[in-house]
Length: 138
View 1 (cartoon, rainbow, N blue to C red):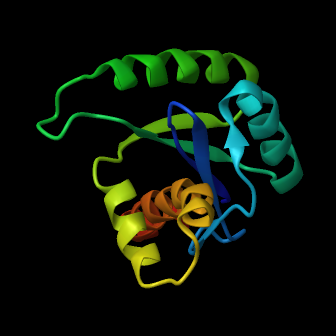
View 2 (tube, rainbow, N blue to C red; view 1 turned 30 degrees about the vertical axis):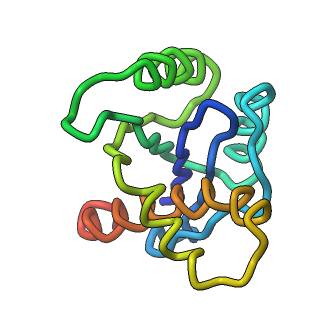
């Protein structure tokens, strides 16, 4: 089973995909801009034969719903109407912080780090999901 994970953001959406066996997560090599996100996501789903989409929900640190949570939910409702794979929502509270830590030792320019940080966050969300659900993904 192949998965697509999305790290929803107000400017761009981070994305990562699993290998065909659903064991290893890889960040996408491009940024998904919010303006064209649904079309780009549909294209990725079709090209890579994605069977399940995971979306990291922006929830406040104490678990509260935020304005970003509401905006992400509206986006997910639009996405659900246009794609065949099921969508599962995941808590992504610390994925961006973890992605920053991964990139902090790198000598890459801040602008370049910003461009891939969201995809690394999506990779972290996806790998955690794959590791947690190993038995059910096979």
